[in-house]
Length: 112
Length: 114
Image (tube, rainbow over all chains, first blue to last red; front, side):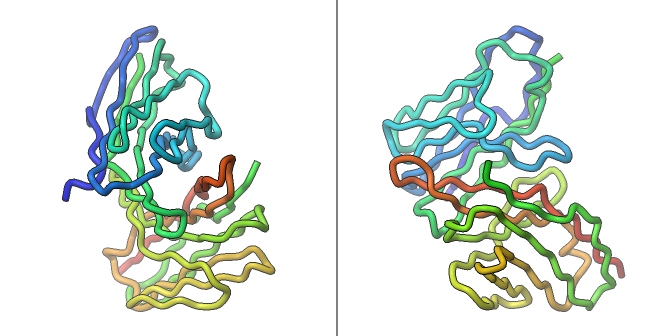
């Protein structure tokens, strides 16, 4: 089982460029999440999708958009990248509220 | 804003000792609590979850929950250098439409020295 797969693993963008971070899970989980992790700030929720067809804002949604393409895939888009979006991005999925969250390996994004 | 608080550390313990990691949370309605371990440069991995007041043991790990005090802890017995990592506390809170979202603490850095 692959679990949660994120692509790409590393990316460097110039300010103003756009890109989409891809996430796919093969565990048939209903819920999927996007987090960013910055030094000293912990994991902060950007957007989540409780089920296929629904998306909701988390703690830090500004500058991002998401698409729940199907039950397996949940993408995160940066329309106009800014240096403040330099971070490590994690996708996670969950079967149920009581079973915890499985994380992907992360995308290390640098915006210059 | 729901909050989860952890001491950032580092917590330094000798090999073989008990490491005690603590977490407090603000949402009294929270029902599910998790401990994750994150090695430097890696993604978080789930090591324990607990829902009921009291203790839950799994190998060298014991999670303790006190909902009245809004307090969760993780004890690591016989600590090993391989336990050196950042430990993240996560708390589920109810969101719109019956969904749940996790809030993570900033993590406690644990160093186990030989």
